[in-house]
Image (cartoon, rainbow, N blue to C red; front, top):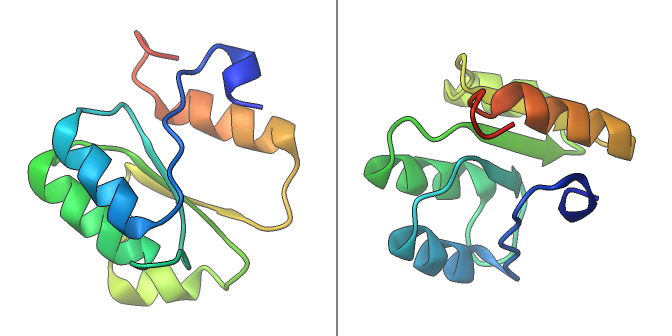
Amino acid sequence: ALDRNDHDVTAVRNGKEAMARIGDDEFDLLLADVDIPGLDGISLARRARDGQSDLPVLFVTGYANKVINEDGLLSEDVRVLSKPFGLQDLIRTVKRMLPANRA
């Protein structure tokens, strides 16, 4: 859905692969599930932001938002999209989170 809406997407299979890609490139947005194989999404976001502190993060999750709130990760550039959600919700949220020159 994001590819079809003119976003360049780098898809990975697990947290380990995501960390390898994050170390190689700079990204406009990290989109991650809270529960991913090999490394949870919260740890992935922390590590990604170690190298790119202004990286916006969008978590998708079936868990309650309080999981992230309690961890202290929610800030202006971290959002949560709760499952189930529609593709238009995803596209709209991504567009709002991207810098104006990348949306």
